Image (cartoon, rainbow over all chains, first blue to last red; front, side, top):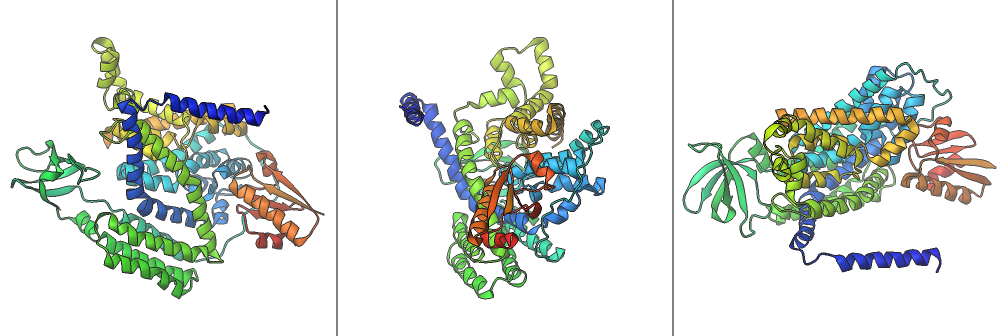
Length: 512
Length: 77
């Protein structure tokens, strides 16, 4: 039998062995499979249409409409060095549109452009300031982590770049001379127009995803009433046994947490305030931004007005005809997305380019995210629902306190316990950083994985540390970087990332 | 005989540029050699920082994107 046939046989044997030994009898295994599906279902309903799809369009627009040539000006050999750091730190998602352009760009900025400092800043920021990832982080893991991630990633790139520059400043590299191949400048549009265009799209994204307020007034079926902040809402309030975890806001038991079964709630209304007002009117605001977006398409992107009107009719009709609660809103939203896609994909000019960049992102990322979500659900489950890996292991390694670890290892009591307690935050953040640095995270998969880890008991500090070290590095990428920078510089770079991630995690965990 | 070089480490956009370049060259009926440059040091030597890129007879024509066949024909003329 030749090689190909042997490979095929091996594949059949492997699949057979897998199925033969599949632990379908194990309750934990069955639960894990269901958890994977639950998580995928939740993502599909809550995040894909309202959050991911607009984010893909925004990322595509960044790739096509932000002039890469003008950004590169700041990273060239004659650039102002101080400005170069700032630009390098932020431009990762603008310049590294294709994931494999990070390395040639890094090499180019180092040897032919602004130097090792800005080049390293760019090397870190490229994967770390992924626009899509930050949007999804804020949406799923919470605004705090989203902002911390964005701020952390930008400051890191500058700091790491500066330190690399300082350490290696004695190396004067002979800059390669010759003409630099720059991208041709694209269709010029005044900066204000571009800015408004992005602002409007971000407006749609932000308001379509405006979360429910935290503080509510509860009226139970037995007559009791109280005000409380919701710390955990059930995913499906109509499921039997579904309960809200709330923290009382007033009264003698203020601050106490309790579980309230959804079935006992006669009525709940959000407490009034700015957040609530915005939440009540979020779809109106979103529609307003969408209208502005349509105008921009007609007047600044040269899309025929009748196309825009035609595409706008189905969503408007559906929005008025259907109830606005819950998942119904996805239907008009989807209709709008479909309309936009049709307009753009049939456009011969910029619109077509924009659509193909957007579609490119979707093709690249959705399959990875799909498997990442299934894997995260299978291994880690959802909060309060374990996957294959029991939560206590996560708590043991990166939990908020060493109690679980001491309990499971039996090393409690005595000197070790004292020692463990004092260095616990340092240890968990460090461990998370190192783990993140070596482990490979496909684009965006760090979000469902972290969601599972946090739900299983990982502390906030280590979570941030993982977010800052994970996507930017992996063992394979370290090897490739070493091929360009050399092993020593790579070691320095990786150590810097780990140290900074640990520190950030420590600060975030302590102060936020 | 035109010397065509497609620069890029091998991601989907680089492959697309190579395919479109070949199609454009064949459509124009010109004589050409097509070379795919994937080594980063070589790419830098040609003065290019953003891939994918197209170099025609030593001159950098396209940087950072993969235009369609029609647009590439203009660069090959």
